[in-house]
Length: 324
Image 1: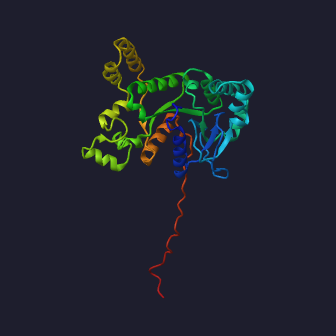
Image 2: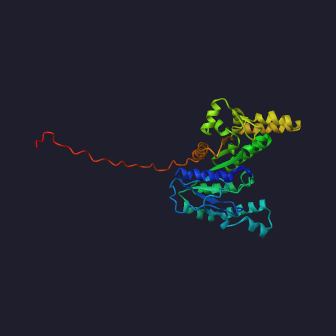
Image 3: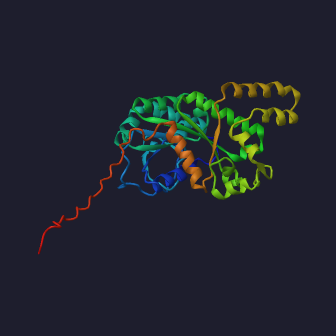
């Protein structure tokens, strides 16, 4: 989930690559009826991990891996727009409602992967997660089928440039968390565009961590020409004072009470914090994936591997008193 351009496709490609590199196999499920083109490499024939029935609710999977289940087999946005004369947004909502009304189709398709780790490629329309109950009801169906799910909300680092835009992203993330009522992880993407930012947050590269220890705490990049570690942390763990300090100085006094109400709302719920993701750094990717695993308790039912040690034959015993 997340606004357009937040890096959902890149996120999925990165996680798929990381999982395969670490020996974990996954399936992709496309729930986006607007998807038109895929260039995925086949994963059929791989040895898939038998584990707890888990599914991670991620969006917009990248074009490098095979889709095992596609909503376009059931309905497509193009057909809805042609036949019903709907626009893109209305047509997408209609498609998701159609899927919900035919949820048995999804259950039947998922029955073939009941013991596997799944990544759901969901539509990018944020209203589906913040305003409508469609995705929540789909999540409830998955839980009823004994899947454990986790929602991941992505917000790109460019939102830091505009504090008003940033807090709108925070409110959207909080709305999705409240509406979906599932375990949730928020991720700040494209941290590689802010030099050393991920390292400053404690999950970046070793080089960035060393630079931070040497006192090089100013982060070069597109965000205001540079950012200090302590300033970045105020965005990863949203500091409502950012809105009061800066936005109030730039807006009309009649909006100050609204800004204060937003600050109070964020403080009262205190739900949203972001994990920094630098896709160029394996440690950062692993940290985010581990957080998602922990949120949905992935791996608790995995059977530990049993290693058998081949015993060497004992040395032949000789009688030292033997003569001759």
